[in-house]
Length: 174
Image (cartoon, one colour):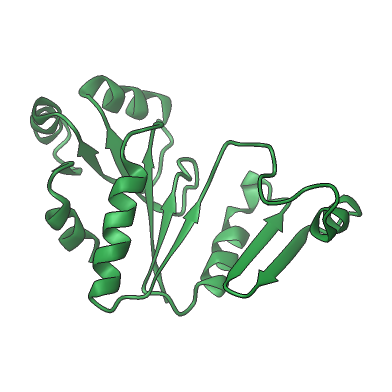
């Protein structure tokens, strides 16, 4: 059964840079790793009205898979937020052979453990205030030394890493 970990953070916080480092490093060590990326983009960038996948979705298919030689794209109407457990089970069935599935984004997906990339302590305060119901936040990755010190002092329950501590983050993920 795979481990699931979400890398969360605002735009340009370093999620993809950290994620690609983790994937590359884990793959070199023989781990099987998959990635699921969320996006707020509403336009379909891998489909168009003239394509068959578009036509199937337009006729009401809830999920349409598109297999190519080395690529699989899944179009899904998604699940209501209250059906998170069903989506979690779906991810388990889809990625059953991986050791780790990294999710980029998925801030509100309660069932995923989250490592949050932040720029400063004000952003940490905002996350904790706005996301009072936030579940499974396990730590922070920060860009400023003073933010790291502040979290260690004020929020000792969370693991905290400086963005440059990629090897330490890798060890933590393993």
